[in-house]
Amino acid sequence: MNVYEEMIPYLLHWYRYNARVLPWREDPSAYHVWISEIMLQQTRVEAVRAYYTRFLEELPDVKALSECPDDRLMKLWEGLGYYSRARNLKKAAQAVCEQYGGTLPDTVTELRKLPGIGDYTAGAIASIAFHKPEPAVDGNVLRVLSRLSGSRACIALPEVKKEMAAELRKVMPAERSGELNQAIMDIGATVCVPNGSPHCEECPLMHLCTAFREGTTSEIPVKEEKKERRIEERTVFLIECEGAVLLHRRPEKGLLAGLFEYPNVLGKLSVKKAEAAVSELFSETEYGTPFTVRSIKKADNAKHIFSHIEWHMTAYLVKAEKGNASLPDDYVWAGPEDLRTRYSLPTAFAKWDARGKAKKG
Ligand code: SF4
Image 1 (tube, rainbow, N blue to C red):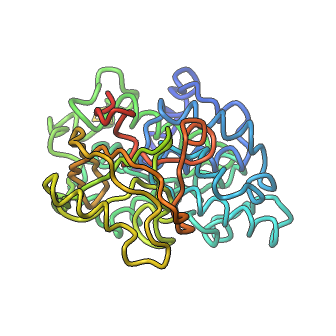
Image 2: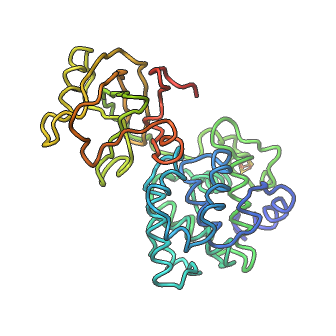
């Protein structure tokens, strides 16, 4: 019997008494598992709880999601980041309605064909909602299994992940695969934690664990250092006119695709250059000048970190007066009510209050 087989009864027993209470576990339908797993990618459980409940209240099933207007979907996703996840959810929901009559398929192979569903999410849906003996291997699971088996293989390598998934698949108990996957996820999240020392004394796998026995929990898992993030300087304009701020819709492709932003340009501009840049925002369009600058002053600087890039933002608060030209289609004046209910501003730009002061937190 190898350690993967040996761990199963201990994990299932532990899970019975220690499973985290999470809203998506109350009724683990395929739709619920899917939405929660997509939200949980790159986002903490505590942050997801409220979003999940609100999302489900408004979009309770695949059909409702497939018909949700894009702007509303972005509003529901506002603050969660990585907005392509929401766009893929809708695309996948449309495909499920067209190809599977509105019910998510129950095999990993079919699930993997849907936009935004990778091996992990497909495994989680198939095992938790449909009790298929499929593994769901993410960073938490890789960490637990590496420490348990004492593996020093780099967990960033796809082949290592594949191999661990294959080993796990061999021992998956029929009917209880969902419990087993969730047990390993919970051990990884609450006991065999990623930051700081793991709580081995609380772990049901301690007597089986190589890293514990050999005192190597600080060395395992092995993970190659990530590449350094690129730093990009940007100058952001908070342009206010008659109680509304100017927003621009970003292009449909690339970072924060299709979302609103405060107008901004590359580089760290002085106040003089910033004034010239803001006055020239529409100079090359057919629309003339929809506003003129009355005053400009420095706002707080802000920073936003994406996975591969870091924005260092120099911001200016601009008071403007409406001109005689209308705005181009990809710009809009947004009042406080619009910002609350209609237009979603991604976290990268939701950094300032109305006076240009950095928001706390
Ligand atoms: Fe992780 Fe410690 Fe449990 Fe091993 S004994 S799996 S290192 S928490």
